[in-house]
Image (tube, rainbow, N blue to C red; front, side, top):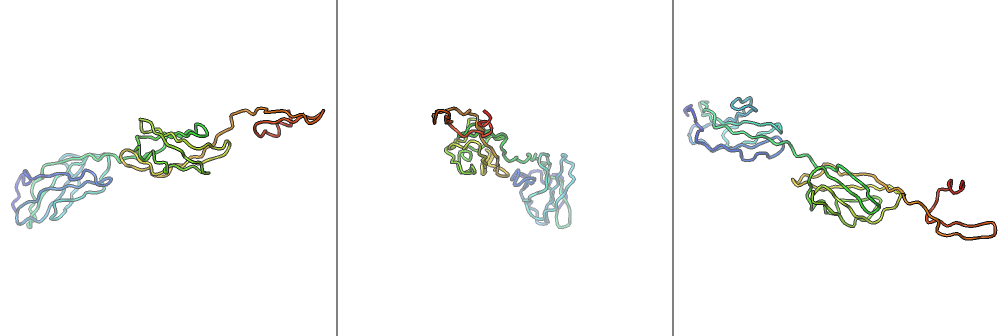
Length: 230
């Protein structure tokens, strides 16, 4: 094999897959036709035509490069070498910027609106089908979830339930929901909540027991201290 300038000048050199997994790319190129071909080397780095890394990949025309940093631009070129260890000039250069990894969705806000309504707000647009799946939400102690609504932003969820008991603590758990890119929540989301009694008691009726005693009937149990001191 002769050492020729532009050895790969007319050879197609492409990136087959921008990103197979986080921090990796696969590069491929057309094979050289010379009979004494021994293999190829991939040169790459974060500066154009200034490569600080080299991989001898042997006699193959596709190779996956790993341990790349997301968010950086990498430049790639290939050379061929023959059985006498003569090496060609660089191929045409290609480059790729590895996008930062997608962050999993999280619940950014929760509100227990009333004993039959809960609100969730996610930090990004979500897959509507996974949001509407009732089995992705559970309440303990058990409260039946009747329906789930999502607004047009695909971030706000309204959960309609059977009536909660005032003063009791419940736990809502959300899991298996996905964003539009198909990323699932990293961990199930759980939050404790309760509803305070905000309705004042009222007197329903009065019963005269005798000339010195009356009995008062309220609509709900009262605090014993306030009743005795009144």
